[in-house]
Each structure stands twice: as C-alpha cells, then as structure tokens.
Length: 79
Image (tube, rainbow, N blue to C red; front, side, top):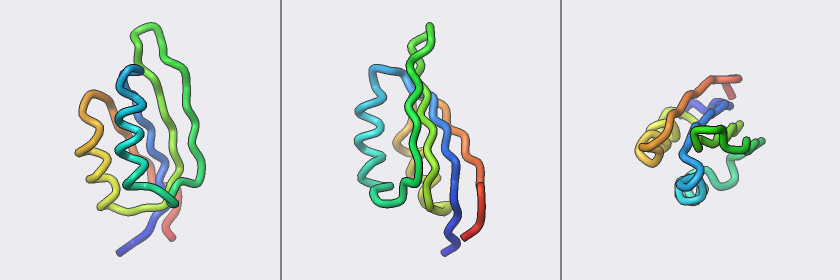
C-alpha cells in the first residue's frame, strides 16, 4: 500500500458540515497533519482544507461520505 500526503479540499453546505466531518473523523483519525475551516460564502457553502496521510482507499471513502459537496485532491508527496 502506497502512502501519500494528500491535500483535500471540500466545499460543503454549511448546515451539513458537522455531520459530514464527524463521519470523516472516524476514517482519518490520527492521519490529519493540518486542517483549515473557512466560513460560509453567500450561497451557504463552507470550505474545509485538510492535509493528511493516506492513499487511494482513503479517497474512495471520502467520495462515499461527501455527497452534497465538491471534493478535490492533490498529492503533495509520496511517502
């Protein structure tokens, strides 16, 4: 299994942010290196940026959990 340092950007509806992040925490607990929460914009979408250690299986889990938002991933480095 290849481990990578990933940058994950999520745009979520502000009202659902806590619910989605709660489910994600059980998947990424102990792997988060950095996290930033940005306030909601005029349309009610909030942005969350995370830097974490993971691989392809983690990206698949994120896609299953985040349904009403937008996800983007960037590989920062190979570990």
